[in-house]
Image (tube, rainbow, N blue to C red):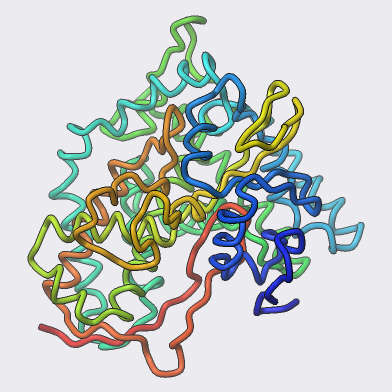
Length: 429
């Protein structure tokens, strides 16, 4: 497998789903935006959309562009199975038979089904609820910094970027402290299913079993909260009654929503903490510029989300014959919207590859999507980022990449963009 993407001679040769291109997609994105912003890619059988205005057109038109792309997503999750021996594939399917059937609730649902579920879960992340969590989130951030501040060199992903969002989402869901190690492993495995990282046969089967165990644990937790309510998200899900049917969520609906909370509740924030820290390490003057400036911190967080969108793209299904950007599309065609490409579109963002903490439209980045499918957990993610970076900068300085680790790389994923490791050095203030 190549690790450096070759420069294609024409856009027809661009394969966004080659692992090397997924690791470093920016040149390919720029060429597609400028030469073929709606480009058919036969390797995946999708039209790739890369221009900001065209993505917004699709995201606003839920009648023409459906979010019922579950089969595509499930197929992507199992791409790493294709080279496994038949005996391993059979065992994997046997284990996975314990999973509840896929159910369209939030990410893969269209109106009116989407609204039925979204209206129930939006109250988990209201501005008031998120605001009330600030002292608790600050405490977790401070305790996590305490655990590594004397070391001077750490893998930032392992020391801070991963544990902070994971503990917060675990606590908010109602996971007991003694169950956190299992939950952390399960949540990490849930996100890893969207990556193209290969695993040996034993690891594939172990991960399948972890997902079944995590599903059973989380659905069981919601059932338990129906009998013993507490101040957590599982209690809120347990209390949900679908108005049109006057019934609670069934097990498949519950797991569908929880599984999305797991990925959206930690993976996107973890990734942005990592990419944001990398930006600071590569731009030393930026560390001093945003120190003690809440407005600059907020814009910096939006810039980190924009430049390295933790969700690089999601599909849509064309429901009727139409055209997009002058390209005819047949009903049933699959689109792949590339938020990562749109976030660097020079038509919408001036000097798009630069970090600009005075950028006026930084908040219009599409890392959380837009429209009815705008990420339900975005307020919580923003709060964690806007509390985390000031705390790091207030207690440490001179963040820099550790010698021998100057070129951190993303993991290849069609959907996500994450850093597996980020070794940094720093000084205490």
